[in-house]
Each structure stands twice: as C-alpha cells, then as structure tokens.
Length: 341
Image (cartoon, rainbow, N blue to C red; front, side):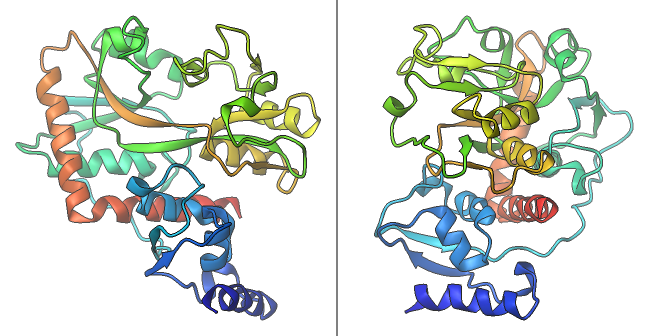
C-alpha cells in the first residue's frame, strides 16, 4: 500500500503547485527493496525526484553497487537536509605550515563559489579539524588542473592535493600516479555511469553489452577503468573510444547518435546534460560502469608524507563516526541536484 500511496502524494503535491523539496517526503524510514526496484525508482517514490538517488546511495553505500539493488535488502531512506552554512574552519589560515592544493570548476566537489567551497573541500577541512595533533593549514586554488600533480605536487611546491582518482596500483604499479604519490583513504566513492540516448537501444546489463560499442570520454580524463585486467577494452581494441574536449561535447555526440554512450562521473555527466539542454534526451543507465574513490595525494618523496596522510585518515574516521560526514555529504548532494533543477 505504501508503494502506491507515495507516488500519489507526490502527484497531489505537484498539482497543488508545490516544488518537490516543499512536499511531504517519505524519509527517515527503512525501506525493503521490492522486485523491479532500483535507486532511481525508490528516490522518485520517496522524494518525487529520481535525481536524488545519490542521497540513498551514499547513506547505504556499504550495501550497494550503484543504482541497482537487491530485492529483500533493507535501505535507510534519509531526509534531504536543509541548506545550511558550511562548518567553520578555525585552523585554516592564509599561510600555514601545511599547504594544500585544489582547483575549481568541479561541482559538487570543489569550487570557490560553492557553499563550503564544495563537498570534498568541506570534508577535508572537517577531517583536518578532527585530526590528532591538528596543525594550521592553508588551501590554494589553481584552476589549471594539468599543473597540479606535475610539477606542483611532485615538486613539493605544495604538501598535499585533492581530489585525485587512484588507479589500480596493484595491477599497474608503474602508473605515474602510483609510482610518484601516496593516496589517502577515499574521501568519497563516485559512481561512473554510462549516459545514453533516452529510449535508445543502448543497454548495460553486463560488460558483454559494451563490446563493439563506441564510447565517449573527454580528453584528459583517466581511462584505466576501461582497461582494467578484467576488461582490456582499449588495449585489445574491444571498443572504440572518442575523446573530445569537454563533457558537453560527449553529451551532444550521444544525442546526435555519433556514439553509443558517454562514460563518466555521474555528477560531471549530469551537469553536462543540463548545461547542454539535453534533459530528457540523454540520461544515465541504471547500472554503474565502475566506481572510483577520490583521495588526498602527497609525493612519495615528501619528508612528512606519512604523518600528513595519517592526520587526514584519522580525521576522516572521526568524521564518519561523529555523523558529520553523512551530514556534509547529504547537504552538498541536495544543493547540487537543486541547482540542476
């Protein structure tokens, strides 16, 4: 009965002129997954907005692999948070003994115009505040990301940088990032999705569905998830990969039928779909292609690399235990999806 009632409540709220955020969300409850459910349909039923599936994803991340889920599994449905000011950062100074490097134009993760300067910036700030033996720190913004790892961080012009994706260093120890940098524990884990034309014939139930297809991923984006040991899609030429300049280019190519799908970070992809005016034309498929962690990095030749990463990792553990991690994540996700609306 509840599964029937919830969509009816949402339709009534919308007919009365209420935006989804103002309607009565069915949240802070436990929900048992039914056959045919996925996180898109569950979010639409509980929030009236399938885009908010990431609120459920991150709240139950240990139980889930992307938007797909298992009938009979119990999920906690969190309430969308109110937009509040970011946490204070009393240890952050214009100059300090610990200097961090990041960049902008990377919503919802890092950007100086975002509340708290982005989800990951706020997580790093909060972790350093909770770290053992906390020290003052400074954050520098450089929007040319191509300069961050080499030469700035490799040359120790800055102590640490964020957020960076970690390759499979066990399988590829010679990878430049693996060889030159230490990585923190993941700050967040991000789903990588296939964005395809709405109503098109592109499906993704297993990797076999991708063989022979043409995918798009912007130039400069990593590709190691497409060529990991159980795929070898690129090295064995099992797919065709086109790499235009921007995520928006990829989404237009999907809409025009020039590629079968665009493979990218859910948030980057969603923002590109909206920016290109392709809502309703291009959408993510339900099964995630892969997932990747975002990390703080430090040069392996940095003389205080171990102690600095210990501070970050210990602070992250305290942040999760305190509940502030979930609060920060939920708030930024809600702000991101609200902005796209």
